[in-house]
Image 1 (spheres, rainbow, N blue to C red):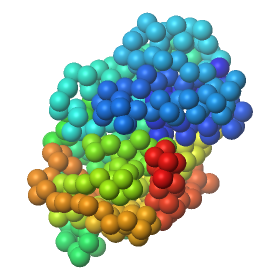
Image 2 (image 1 turned 45 degrees about the vertical axis):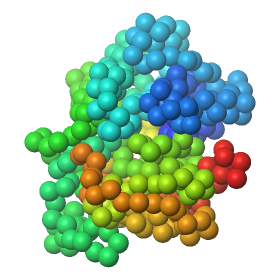
Image 3 (image 1 turned 180 degrees about the horizontal axis):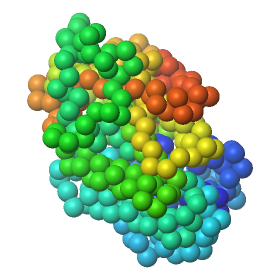
Image 4 (image 1 turned 30 degrees about the vertical axis):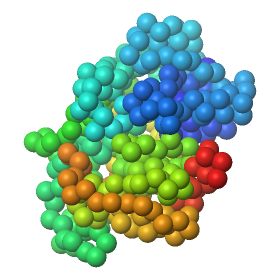
Length: 355
């Protein structure tokens, strides 16, 4: 087995499985559809697992394993040993709202699960490349203390600030901020991945993403806002915008562009690296702008309302600076703009809903 992908039926996991299988790697996927436990049966990714098994046949092997189960994971790593060249770790509890409901579940999935995978990589395939899908929530609410101005449809950082040109870089502090419990569990994972890289000289990287999206996203109210926004528009389901006048800004990256970044790192890995990754200045939008674009692309009027209470720890303005990654891997480029992303998400959601 050449590669292990955790969360293999999820948005990034399934994209990674297809991408690396397309590069002639044999891929083993680990996914137990915890997403349906987190967000309900409508958000299940089991359809994605079936699709992967049908499409890829012998190039893909699936294991229904909870990443908190060290013994079950150990059997996989023992079976394949140093034939494993790559671990792409995308499995997670991904919502900061949901984390507050079950903090122990959130932490054990995100932090303990990551530690299990790192230790098994060290024991059985220490030369493998370990890629971790982290999050911008590791910075807590520190971005909310940046000087921002209110424009007609969005918040925007002051033009005088160092982050105005390219966005927020990796120099932002992770200390003295409100992270949300999700942010705390992902930060613990992020630091573990860095530490195993530096302390044990393992080839590891944390990719701190903004909004990750694509046609394979099983969007839910608490996670995956573009996919859920599209789903609500197509099904005429009411949608709620929480706080900041609906002008909060997110950069957005298509799952394929993100996985292509993983490939570049895999080809020329480093130890204990951290990268902000996302759409950056090229691909971003506010909630109001996203609603307008989805309505235009679907031809449907969204039934949306506004709740002035923002979600705890939510960012007012996030645009990540990808300059560091682009300096290390200058051949990597974004290939999907915002229109492309929305159209691709609409197509993916429509197919699953039979619209």
